[in-house]
Image (tube, rainbow, N blue to C red; front, side, top):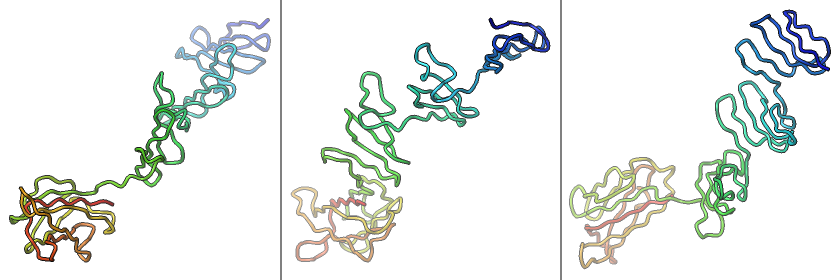
Amino acid sequence: MPSIINSDDGVVSGSSGLKSTGGNDGILVFQKNGTETARINTDNQLVVAAGTVSLPVIAPTGDLNTGVFFPAADTIAFTEGGTEALRINSSAQVEFRDGTAALPSITNSGDLNTGVYFSAADTVDITTGGTQRAQFDSSGNFKFNSGYGSVETAYGCRAWVNFDGTVTPPTIRGSGNVLQVTRATTGDYTITFTNAMPDANYAVTGTAAVAATGAVARIISPVPTDMTTTTLRVRTSNDTGVFDNCVVVSIAIFR
């Protein structure tokens, strides 16, 4: 039988058991086969071995490969069936498994095929009903599946503006990422972006009307030599090429 001995020199008679060191204020040591397995220190902390992913130091009876272990300094890890399921690292970050669309690593009780998973490095995926719906990839692109059959890159509207071009300066009714609109001559407008485009290879679309009611449509033409990352120049004209000032001009930029 293991010996339980209270002694200042910490001598144990037998290879397994308990021993106390340091007198009444000392340390209680748990020893098995001559090796320390745990201790209660002078601050009354229970100090245990680090354990491993296959043999966690804290485990339930009958399921010894599931529990808690300590793989590195200032790190807590949880294992299930001998596989690491989650850890809290030394920077206090919670690290999850990668997960899949069918079994996302971050989910909610009762709906286990809906949540967030990580399909590749520097990539975050969103799944509902076990199907990938959206992704932020490693280049920062946002991709989504909205009835297209697969997740593809979303090309957002980078800027838009609705303005009255019959006055100087043109009056902006509403806009996004547009700092100002100016008019040089009849039907000749320059749009200045609040935040620059990544390049000048964007697409321009829009409509124009010469009157607010009973509107007569006009043609909007971007000026290719004046498409830059910070400004866009457009002209409004009728179908014979005569420039007009239009009361309703709506422009959208896609990239």
